[in-house]
Each structure stands twice: as C-alpha cells, then as structure tokens.
Length: 381
Image 1: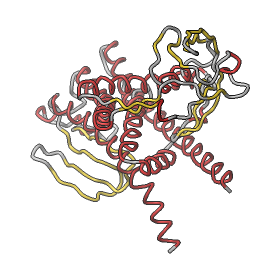
Image 2: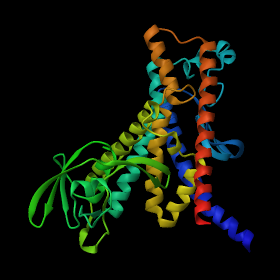
Image 3: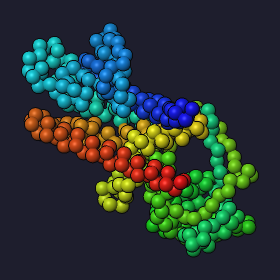
Image 4: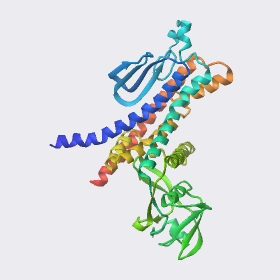
C-alpha cells in the first residue's frame, strides 16, 4: 500500500507535467512546421519528445510524425538538416539534386529561414493568448477591490501612513480597480517612490510610499519583487465577479500575455545586469511540482500555468544563444548584413558553446529546484 500510494502521488505530479510540457512543445514546434510548409520546405520529421520511438506514422507529404519516450522537448527536422537543431548536413547538401535542394531548409532565402525560426516562439505567445482567452471567457475574473484590511508592522505602507479601511484609487495617476492591479504595479516598481491616491472616510488623500524589495515564494520558485505591506483579507463584500464576451476576453488575454512577457523580460535583463538573482530560476523539477499543485486546484489553474510557461519558453528561445531559435536568428542577421553565411567551423563552434550554455542552465535550474524542495521538506519536518 505505501508503494501504491507513492506511485499515485508521483503520477499526480508527472501526468500534469507531461501534459503541460507536451502542449507547449507541440505548439512551439508546430509553429516551425507550419511556416516551413508555407515556405515550401520539406519536413522530414516532427517529433514530440526525444529518445526511443513509441509511435509514428508518415503523412502524405512524407513527414514522419513520431511520439518519443522522453517527453522533455521535441523538434522539427527539415530536409537537409543534420539533426533537429537545424544544423546543415553539409555532405548531403553537396550531393543533392536541384529538386531536393529547392525544398531544403538551408537553400531557402534568409528571410524565409528567419520566418520559420521565429514562428516557434511566436506560436508560444499565441498559445498563451488562446489559453488566457478561454479562461477569461469561461470563468470570468474574480476581482478583489483594492481595500486595505491590514498594514504590516515596519512596512513601507505603515511608514507612508496607510490605515485599515483605505481604498486605493490610483497610483501615480493610474486608476486602480483591483487589489491584484495594485500588487502588480507595486511589485514591478520596487525601490521607487509611488504616489497613492486613496479614499478614507469619504475624503481623498495622497500618500507617498517606496515599496521594499522582498523575495516571495511562487509555484515556480522564489522571485524578487517590491512589497508595500498592505493586507487584504478578502471580505465577501469586497469581491465582484466580471464576465466577458469573446472579444473582451481576447483583449484581456493579450494584455495578460504582454504583462507576463514584460515581467519575464525584466527578469532576464535584471539577471544580466545583476539586479536579479539566478537563484530564482526554476527547471523541470520545479515545473513538475508546480503542475501537480495546480492540478489539485483545477483545470483552469493548470491552463493558466501552461500559458505562463509557454510565454517563458518563447522568450527563452529568443535569447541569442546558438542552438536556440535566437541563436539562429543572430546568425541569419550576420548573414543578411555581410551577404553570406558564417563558415561551417564558426557555426559548429557556436552550436557547441550554445549546447554547453543550455546544459549548464538546465543543471543550475534543477539544482535550484532540488535545493528549494529540500528546504521545504526540512521546514515541514
């Protein structure tokens, strides 16, 4: 029985993780596949997962669709590629008949290759918009009004003079209609003075506060944000539910996607500038843990996590690191400027460096996950 219980618990995390990751990978690779087909490139293989083949079939265009045993990624192999990373098979390319070269990836104009490459991350962003649209359309939004129910001792809010019962109307002139909107603005403007317009006992007052930097725990790990120090107890009278039509849901989904892109981009920039900590990074273990926790809440929570992860995958792939989509785009930009592709030796060296960086990144992120989970277990113990 303990063994069965352990297997059931493991499955409760692995199944949502595999489903979420497979959905994100499929859309990413399908973006490459679709634009590749539209550009007239022959697709030899579309693989969901790596390693031994579990199932496969060949469509009428000659593409082998395969499901592999290791569900930690996937790839599209275009004609003329040496592998799923779109590195050219130089030996095969040299002996190709003209008809084959015409449908090979390496023989396409640079703008077509760039379009095919950028289609993967773009598909991730589109997936996020679709998922957010569905969530808003089906579930609407539970909006907590920005009332202050408590003020933390020693916080920036206490120093600024906030009191229980205050209603936040605007921040730096920007109207605030929910506690979440207030939190998002505060979290992204840490260590900067903000001007709050509040309603207190029928009067409007102005308070100035500077959010303080704190590390908070999220389902995907620890993140560094600005904290004001006001509390919301979620009284029933302070909640309202907003329902939206399809158009409004899509508009909200675009805004939500842009918010996540901006926040993720800020983190990446902050990481390289030293303002953010690399300890906040999370890997596959953290994603698996988050997927399992979201599955306990419900399908909407799992889809919300999938949307956020899809955006993160899109942004990660746009980094100018050889092996990733952004690395390919960097090489194509050089090719467009100088009128010829970089020589094979330089590209091979770049891909080896990129592979090393990506592997190191994955190992470091997994180390962070294991360290965080170990601390949680010790704390619970």
